[in-house]
Amino acid sequence: MSEEEEIRAQTLRMLEARSKERGVLIPILQEIQAKFGYLPREAMLEAANFLDMPESEIYSVATFYNQFRFVPPGKHQVKVCLGTACQIKGGKVILDSWERELDISVGETTADREFSLERVACIGCCAMAPVTSVDDRVESKVSPTRVKGILLSCELEKEKDRSEKQPG
Image (cartoon, rainbow, N blue to C red; front, side, top):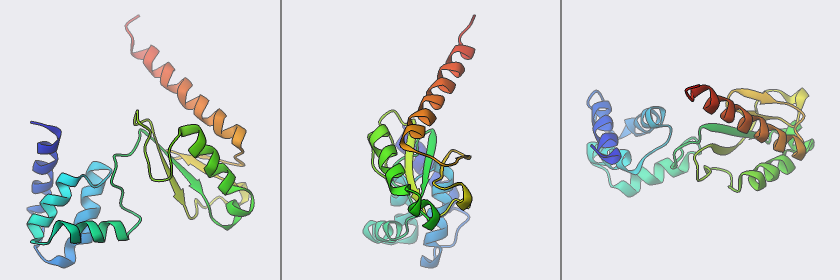
């Protein structure tokens, strides 16, 4: 079974327990994203068929809310805080550094699917501004140099995992 067929099959199983009312669209999209980490086109097509709605309407609703993503997330999710405290302490400069180092823009995933980059309104660590979180690890007082260091530590962890998996 291809990846697309598997996505369709899993989505159909999810939809079986749902009502066909238009009002359940957002919960359906949230459930799809929780399952796959993003909204695959195949899943949105199945939702459109299930709810008897045009695909364009499903897409219109999904693009209206910034909680939904349309590309698979990377292995590591980088979130850059741009709340007031982080903004004042250089959050935009930090975001620019991440974009430059990863060679992607906000909302994108690197070609190797290692990293996704998001902008968030607040991480809740204002005293440690500017803040970035990588996966669930909060990095405080981030500078452009620290961005490079954080990426280096991710690469070192990756190499360590690879060497531990190799038969010795």
